[in-house]
Image 1 (cartoon, helix red, strand yellow):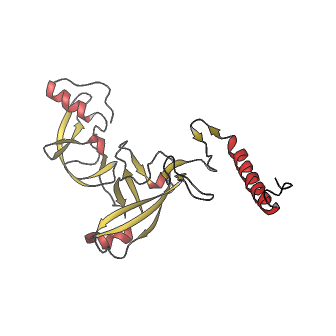
Image 2 (spheres, rainbow, N blue to C red):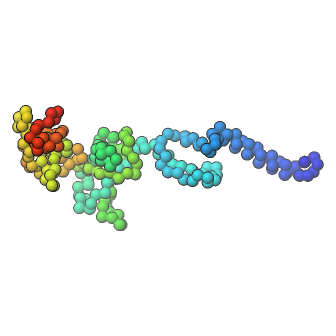
Length: 234
């Protein structure tokens, strides 16, 4: 067509350049092309956090199409009421419980550290933020809401039991104290603070008394049926 002067050499060179560009682009995508579409491989492993384009949309070179999170380093943010502001400087760590597996995670076991705590509440909030950073060595979902237990200065000579030792009846808490090999006494207790796995006992229990820490509910049911279950532990 150039020889016949149907098109000019300049027009021919422009068409050829566009063709070569399209050919190279096709060859680059041909290996990942299938009937379902084009497969795009991410340069890192992780979890798909958000998708920035919808199916069927056109994208340009360099346009982000998705956000991938490796979830290795996460932040935990607790909202503390203003009345506890003076105690924020004593906070050293935290535990938290997730709603999807009811597991209590300890930041001390996740290489956690206190990042900062606010000096004032927000414009539309009466809470002060406290922020921690930790390694996600478990299966913790970023962005989820959790129950946080802030840990501050230790209480000396505190009497504590695992939360699993408690039995609740109409807002009153009890523990079962072992009297002998097969005898137990149901004892009302007054609770103090807890860290998600252990709770302080303010009254009702004396040091040295043996408390059922696993299977307390089975002991309760057994006391109602006048039989003692086997397999309990202390």
